[in-house]
Amino acid sequence: MAEELPETPDTAEEEPVKQRKNGLYPGVSDELAESMKSGWADTELHDLRPIPQTAETAARRAALSARFPGERLVVPAGNLRTRSNDTEYAFRASVEYAYLTGNQTEDGVLVLEPTAGGHKETIYLLPRSDRENGEFWLDGQGELWVGRRHSSPRRSGSTASPPPTSASWPARCARPPARCGSYAGTTPGSRRR
Image 1: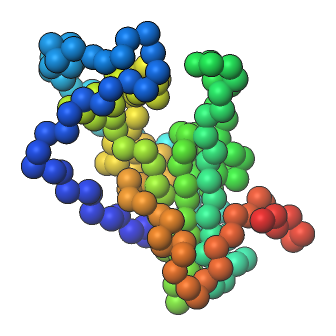
Image 2 (image 1 turned 45 degrees about the vertical axis):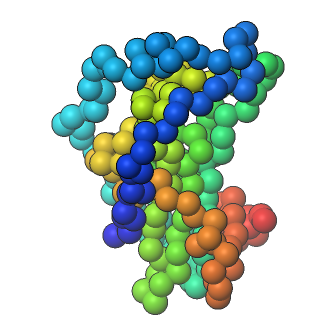
């Protein structure tokens, strides 16, 4: 049903720990960086079951595909908004995105690519935080602070969305001949760009 793109190849060299852009201290000691790379338990979730809405969301995406033949459809989930300093508003995925995927995670994008028989569905999600380069704990949106992200196999097994990838989608959106649009609803007259 949905295309699963290959993972980005790992680089042979180990990336250095990124220094914080703003904070109380200008950098992180090598000892602390090495300590934070190791000793973490396996956080993969096992034996997840699909959510009950799986069949319904697939039917909704098929209905949307039938309404917009030949058009590339992009449905974003939205992202976290900062309220003040390091305090964010509670995240709520866009209604359209949640309705079509059953997925409630931020920064996700559902792309329906036009094909001869309808649309090919792909969902793009943020990948798991990397513990090796410090993203896990140095980034304010790292998993240590905001909670775990689901890996690609975990997410595809537990939600109604097509299998996710962490690939970049803007280049695909720029390809002709299909138009790229974001639609806020599927009833006539509700198209917004």
